[in-house]
Length: 513
Image (tube, rainbow, N blue to C red; front, side):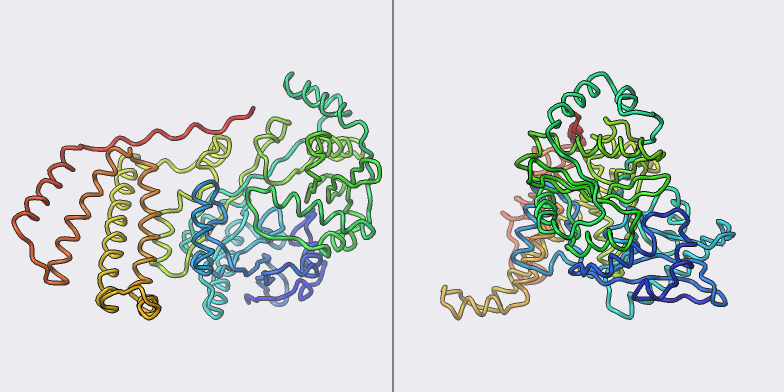
C-alpha cells in the first residue's frame, strides 16, 4: 500500500473518488468547484492510499493560517482581537486540517469491502502521511474539521496513535420528511411554534420566490447579501467568492439550485442548495437585513425548503450547522461533529490542552453539551489538578514578566523618555518576553476567575510578592531584611486563613425565547 498526497481533485478519476463516497452530495464535482473558486488563504490537499493502483481510502484537506481565537466570543474575543492588531502573528498558526472549510463533514471515504479494522489501519496510514507532510512544510498544527459522529470510533483510534484531542464542533441539523404537506409538517410542531410559524408565513405572503439554476445575471446582488450575512455571523472561517456560487451551480447541475426571494424587483434573500432523490442540503443563505425581520426571511426560506422536499418526495432536509437551538424548535434532530487537533510542538500543545476549555463551543450551550457527552472524569481530581495547574501557570507567567522586565531595565539603563531610550527599550528581547508573559498571565487569570470567587482569588495573588522577594535575592542579590520576612509570613498566613475556594457556579445556559 502507498500513501499519496495530491494537490488537486483532478489527480483522481471522478468515478474512483465518488465510489468511496456513495450517495454523497459533496462529491468530486463539488471539490472541483471549490478549487476553482479561488478562496483566499487556502491551499487544497488530498491524502489517499492506493494498493496496486486501486484507491482504498481518501480524505480532502487544506492548509491555512488559523486564528487561535476563532471560536471565542464576547469579551475574550475583543481582548484577543486587540492583541492580534498589535501582534498580527501572535495568535496565528499554520494549520493542516483534514476536511474542508466549506464541507458539511470531514469526508473520510473507504473502498467497498474494507471492514472497520481495515479502515482504522488505513486512517493510521493517512495520518502518518499527514505528519510527514506537516514536517516537510513547517506546519505547526494538525486537525480534522467536523469529523462525523458516525466515524467516531475511527477518529478516536487515530487520536490515540497521533495524540490528537477533540473539541465539539457545531452539530448538523436534520429534519426527517415524514409528512405529505406543509400543514402536516406544522402539525408536528408545538402549539406555540406552529402558531408563530403561521403568523410568519402570513407576513411573508408578498415575497416572490424563484428557483434558479443560473445566477450569473444577479451575482453582484447575491454577493451583497452573502457579505451582509457573513458580517452578522458569530463564527467565521472562510469568505466565499462569486466563482464559488456560480461554479457550484454549473459543476453540480442538475443537483444544485438557488432559491431567490424578491420584494418587487429587489433581491432580498438567496439560498444555495444541493439535492438528489433523498436529501436537500442547505448550503448557504444570504439575506438583506433591512428586510429580514419584516418579512421573516429565515423562516420563509426554511418553510420553502420543507415544501420543496415534500413536493419532490425527498426524505430528509439537512440544514447544516449554526442556529441549532432554533432548528431543534423547528423539529430537527442534531448529529454531533468533532474537531480533532494538536500542536506539533509538545510544549505549545500542553499549553493548549491546559486552556482548551476556554475555547469550547459548548461552554454556555446546554443543548450542545447534552449532544456531546464526555467521559466522566474523577471530578475532584480533575478540578483540583486544573486549579493547581492554573495557579502554577499564573505564578510562573507573572514571575517571568517581572523578572524579564527587570533584565530589560538593566539592559537599557536609566530611561529619560527620549527617542533613543525608547529605541533601546524596544530593542531589548527581555521587554518582549515580559509583554508575552503578561499576555499569558492575563489568559490564565481569566481561567482562574471562571472557577474561583474573586474575593478568594484576588488576595491569593499576594503570593507573587513572596516569589518576587525570593527571585530578587537569588537572581539580583537584593537584600532580604526582617521587615520583608515578616511581610512574607503575614501573606502566607492570610492565604491559609482563606481556606479552600468553592467552585463558582456555572453561568445559566442560554434559553430559547
